[in-house]
Length: 410
Image (tube, rainbow, N blue to C red; front, side):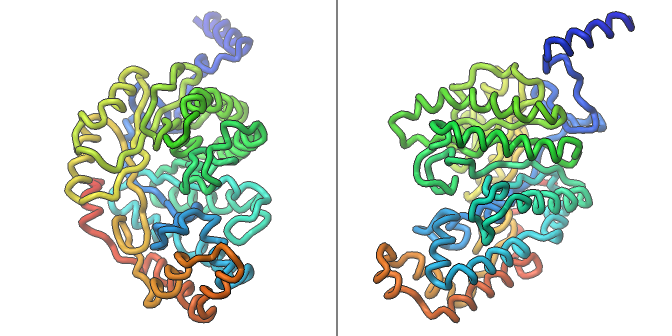
């Protein structure tokens, strides 16, 4: 028996076969259609997303037209200048999510947090107040890892905004087209950042896995089918980069068109620790409505996870959670916190937020004359931003109890 084991080990080493390698049981790992915890028990993901924190989106600030991170940043610079804008972003990162938020999430019965982030946090590109972010991404992930460790939560790292942009809409902080699938330079950077992340966290058991990209390839584009066929090869390329430094963590793969289409995938055996992830915000709260997800899960024999769900009535959310539980699909609600409600913790609008900040964000600003004419009183604008920072802190947010009940975490 020892000789047979030795020969098998040698064969695996020579062939480089991933499937020959046993999973390290200190980590959450894939076992058929289930995730298994280090103690051998099944992990059914339940939790929330820390959206808007490291990947700002306009609607969570009450902004409609100014709806991506670079647009928000530009609007702020036009209103109060680059120095004050940089100071705001630093205060925002320090206060929007703190350890108190993570403790609260754990207290609701959640077991997992999904952390969306922008790739620029790992580059020297101008982003959220800094022009050298090479250590910024790790700074914040390190904090969340430690907070989750203390709270007993698992963490999924989600590259929500990829180099070149992967979606072609405001959610990827890009310029309206998924250039990632046509740019070799962007693909190299995409794989390199994931390899850096995997190298740093390869031994970190709090991290459940790496979600390579969020909602790739929107349906707007005439060549979407061509890009769809490039999705799986790019996933394989990134997984190869990750596995060169980390064979411990699960890798999560989302489908095209808002994580809802999986027909472009034909190979789910290239790695033995991958799973798929879907999203849902509407439709009927029935198993029939997500039959495509269930069927794909059954066909691949791998876990399916609802990475985003929410922004609906409490009754719909509660009904849909029951459907997911009945069909073994774990979930994380989107988002944990935002202005107003439709989340776990609501942020109150500062008194003049709409008349100062929102009004300027919606004003005509296509020329310098427009900017000068629309620019509000800078002191009032700064006061509203300071008020937002105060209001967004955990102790000042409003717990949305019925919303949390609809998540059926306990």
